[in-house]
Every structure is written in structure tokens, then in C-alpha cells.
View 1 (cartoon, helix red, strand yellow):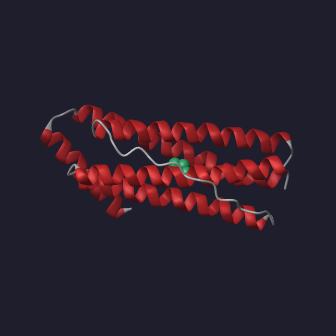
View 2 (tube, helix red, strand yellow; view 1 turned 135 degrees about the vertical axis):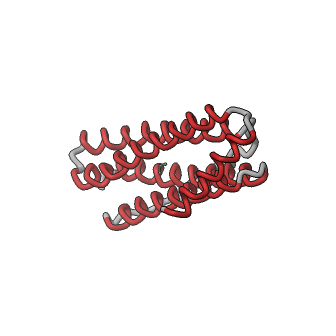
Length: 164
Ligand code: FEO
């Protein structure tokens, strides 16, 4: 594989693992602030990001290239509110989409068709993940600081992750 492409994919492994780590920190914050449903939701999201990293690792090794794991920065663990947690998750997803777009453009430019095909899954996944994050930001915005609305939303998030 082209060295530039290989480096970009390796960087993406770190990005996915970093997202997983950040979502785990968010889950711990939510759990500590008595939002067990949102905490569980975020924990599952953290696991999903690990799966994304694994998929890329498998792809890099399938192409007979070396996976180099980078340092993962310490994630933010202090937030102003539940809403700010979900706004931060949305920021993460938007940044991740931009990174995948950049990789896709590179794959196209160098005519790496296999990587292009692989990244198509990630492009679709980002559409889903951004939509989910946007919906959740809107829902927590609507709940505001109203305790009963926050409780209902937290419970809804819990059942969403246990039934899927
Ligand atoms: Fe792996 Fe949320 O993107």
C-alpha cells in the first residue's frame, strides 16, 4: 500500500481509539452524575469505536502492512452538563467525518480502489453517527434542566441500548 495511505489509516486507528476513550470518559461522567441510561448508551458507543479501530487494523494487516499504535491523549472528563457531553460527542463525530473524507479523497487520488471501497462503509457509518448525535443534542436541549424530562430521556436512552 502507498505509504501516505498507510500512515493515514494508522492515524485513523488512533482516532477511533481516542473516540472510544473519550466516550468512556463521558460514560463515567454521566454515571457519576446519576444518568445511568445515558452512561450505558455512551459505554456502548465507546465499544463501537473500538470495533471501528479493529476493522481498520484488520484491513491494514490484510494488506500486509504494519499497524503502528500511536499515543492516545487523555480525554476530557469534566463537563458542564449532560447537554455539553452530547455536544462534545457531536463535535467528535463531525471531526471524524472530516478525517474520513480526507482519507477517501487520498484513496481516490492515488487510485487505491480497495481502500476506497473499505472507506465507503465508514462514510455511511458517519452519516448515521452524526444524525444520532444531532438528535440527542436536540433531545437534551429540549429537556433543558427539567428533572422529570431528563429522567424520561435517560430511561429512554437506557432501553434504546438494551433492546438493540
Ligand atoms: Fe468510529 Fe463515531 O466513528
